[in-house]
Length: 345
Image 1 (tube, rainbow, N blue to C red):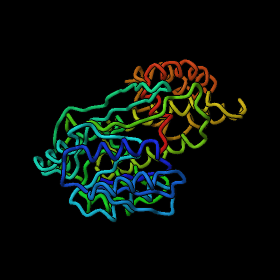
Image 2 (image 1 turned 120 degrees about the vertical axis):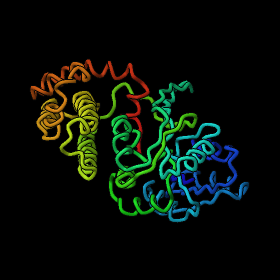
Image 3 (image 1 turned 90 degrees about the vertical axis):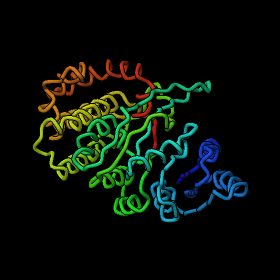
C-alpha cells in the first residue's frame, strides 16, 4: 500500500487507520511525505513507531505523483495499491481484492467506488459507482469489457485498484508529466489480458462539496482534451479506431466533459470578461474532437439534455445560456458534481 501525502495532517490518520485496521497482516504500508509544511510527517511517524508494517519516506517535492513513484520504488510486495491522502478503505477491502487477484490470476482488480462529499456540518453525501462483478482472461475480452469502465471514469486514475507491482512500476516510470497518474493507468491497461471487477470492496474517494460558484479554470478544457487524445491513442492500439460502436464510450465521456467545461467557462467565479468567456466556449464547440463527438453521438443526443443542440450548432451564446440551467442540474447530482470540480489530484 502506498500513500503519497502533501499537507494532509487532517486526513492522514483516517487513511492510514483504514489500512492498518483491515485485518490483513501480509502488508507493507509505504507513506511518502511530499514536502509537507504541516504536521503530516509527524502523524505518519507516530504510526511507524507503533506498527512495523509502516515505512515513512520523505521527498523534497510537493507532487504526490512523485511521491507515488518514490513509494512504488521502495515497495517490495508482489502486488501494489495506491491510496490517496483524503481517501479510505471499507472494512475487509484488502482481503476481497487479494482473493479476487488470486482466484482469477488477475493483473488488475477493480473495486466499487464511493464518492463522498463532506459537508460543512460534518455530514457525508455519497454516491456509489459500481459495475457488475466479472473477470476477463484474454486481451480482446478485457478491451471490450473495459469500455464501460472508461466511460464512467473508473479507469481515469490508479487509486484503489490492485496491481501487479512490477508491471505498475514500469507503467509509472514511463508516465512522468502533468497527467502522470492517468498516463500510468492507460499504460498499464494497454496490453492487459487478465482483470476482474469485484463487489464488497469499496474505495471511499473524498471530495470537497462544490462551492456555490466554482472558480473559473482556464486549464480544464485542455486537460479534458489531453484525456480524450490519450484514450483515442489507446483505442487505436486496441484496434478500435474504425469501430464506431467501440469508440462511442470515449466520445460520450469527452462530450460530457466538454459540457462541464462550458459550464465552468460560462459561470466560474473570477475576474473574466464576458467576451473572454464566450470566446473560450466558442473554441470548445469548434474544437475538432468536440465536432467528432457531436457527429458520432447524434443518434443518442438526448443523453446530453439541452446542451447537445447548441454545441451541435456551434452557438457559444446558446451554450452559455444553457450552462445556467445545466449548472442547476449538476448540483442536483452532488456529489458527482463535486467530484468533477472539487477533487485536486
